[in-house]
Image (cartoon, rainbow over all chains, first blue to last red; front, top):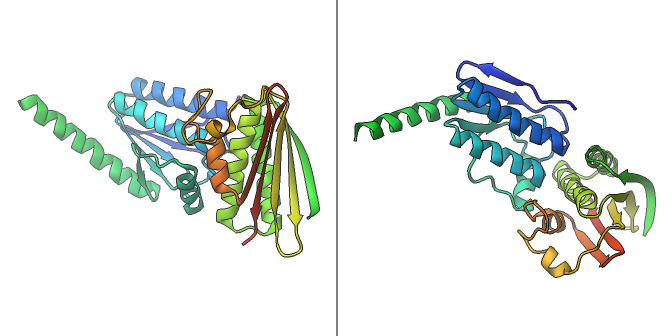
Length: 130
Length: 135
């Protein structure tokens, strides 16, 4: 079975989904990313879906699961590059991805991820002071 | 109602759901649906093909380019010989699922299409027909 490659970029993991994924490929990505966050001590995950021409309920749920699992493992997730037609369709389908951060492109996504991770570290240090 | 092109696909495995999406996209483009409508009908096709596979135990999909003289569109028919749906009204509710999904497949596909029809008999199977018109 084909797998989606995961690239490491400093503290972040970068995934570009370029194929029309069937469900098992999406689930394998979820498992692989979760393992790589732990193995590489990653602080952030950037998922580029600019090449995806649909996101159905299964892929939507998988993306939301990845973000939740990453959060539990102390990593932030940012989804970038969603096509406008995909966003319109997702909302009409009934999926709003409330727990996932988004950015328009990879560059903005990386800035957001850096800010989120820094913010998270500052918050944690503040908590330790108490 | 006139059918100009038709394509019949078998849904037996997850890969077939991807093929249904691709065939729907190709016909929606040929029919001249705009990008948002193409995306909506392909997404609806993906939800319904997955239902055919997961809940119907597999089946067939008929993908047609249709015209009623005034307008043209894409019609998709999903047929399975699975267990059928006991309570269609309940199955159509947002969030209801008999499996592990989100429960948005049927209700979501209905919202994404212009016309939606479902027929189901216990022990005999389920047929879902959706139409997306151009414009």
